[in-house]
Amino acid sequence: MEATGAQLHRFTWLSDDLIGELPIEWNWLPDEFGPNEDAKLLHFTLGTPCFHEYANTPMAAEWHREKLLANYSSQHVIDGPFD
Image (spheres, rainbow, N blue to C red):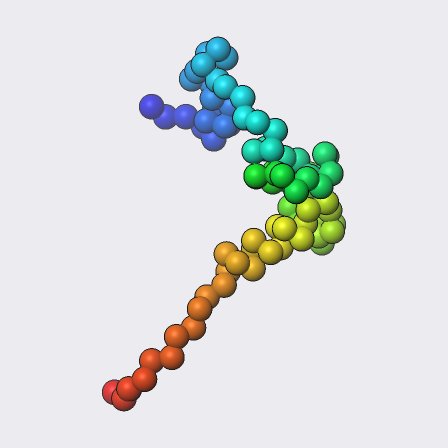
């Protein structure tokens, strides 16, 4: 089957009665709903905090923290001769 990204995103191959709902904390919209410590997944709809205009939106600090963790690299020192 070939499908566009929009078709996949909208589940167009399923009838509506086969599509369930997510609890709201699994699709939390902080820029629309405000902060929520119980949110499981943040969905920035207006713009992600990587853009200057949205860097300080509600829950942007959590986004910046996760970005730092995702980009973290542990450096290991290797002892021994280098040929």
